[in-house]
Length: 509
Image (cartoon, rainbow, N blue to C red; front, side):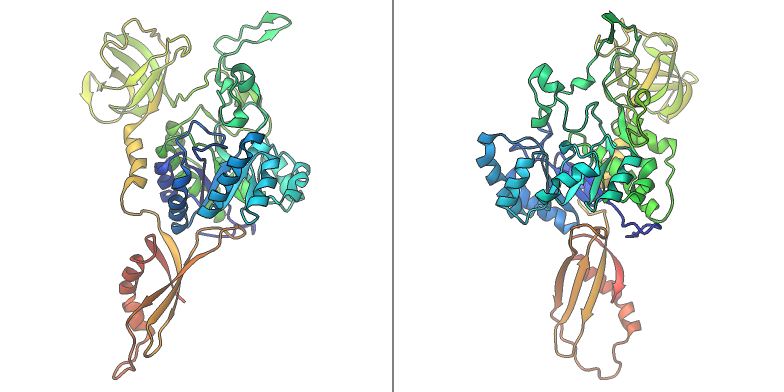
């Protein structure tokens, strides 16, 4: 992979979320450079995720480091006074486990971390609401090594920030958005006593709301979700973000499935690699469909292109709906006659347009698809008949033109799961090899590998491999470069047994 873009910028880190062990493996095998995760013992803003225990940390960090990745822990909630003792012990355990950095919201917590473990790197979480070079300058004396910008920053604002500060900056490129400024939402606590700044967000922005103007309700039709943004999907802007000098591109999703992590990480890995070769990737409709099926409330560029509130918040839904696949023509007994713009298969999940809150939205798996009145096991589009679970359509609200959304594709899920569920490593690491061969001495090799990009804090991994064979003086034919190249496969086998990932050799030096 290129470590420098055509503009001279170093390649950014691809940072993936992990809510459990399977998500970690999915991130590793699909091209992440680093993983961030929370701990079940608290102090992280995704308390509902499975998370990891403190006892898991040494094994988790060892896995990540052996595979060439960094591991960041989220300590991104406010810390109360009566928790300081527990927080201190918590931080010490993180440092002992070899955590590469912690993400922090609480400024007081930053100071405490430096007192406890001065060597532990601290990143300012997006919860710290860094929206300008001036706010970054205000926290620089705290000894922060990286800033995760607020998600409300546009590309133009990001360029201004990176031009005015030497602080490495990270930005989100994919996942859920909040209607409030990052770290500043008090709605969940105000309405239900669950503080988002303590990891207990109740997602109040995903509820239905009425609009009152001068004391009168405004009729908005089916627009009821007035505070629920669509999901961020900035794949089109990867070259621009690299050119802007962003050091890390972050994917949201510690509550998402491992298949989501595999899918999204893989596509952004490809987008970054193409951008580093000077090419702007154009995702096909099928690629976008794959990404939306893993999880999507609808994709938008978020605030990357500036403020466009109508595009960001269409107001018609707040939950995962998948991909619009077609429309209902009519109901035919236990079947639906539909016009499909996308090919669907038996076993796919669908949902019919309806009011989820009122209970009129129905959905389920396709039991059978009929084309020309005959059952088929092949994907089908155009006018087809769909058979759902028996009785599902009884008393259901079905009408002509009703939207049909694809919510799940088992074949796609199976394909993404295969990328990380295999016991054999799938991801390849490039290695640098230096050898020392001397008469009468064991053969020594120094092996180095690292997927981290220039300018990031992660050092190269290295170890020394010693083979007990001691070469003797040549009697007839001395060893030559040609002979060594013919024996290179034997050496590769030896290395693959020693290096903790399948290796793609870069040649001996």
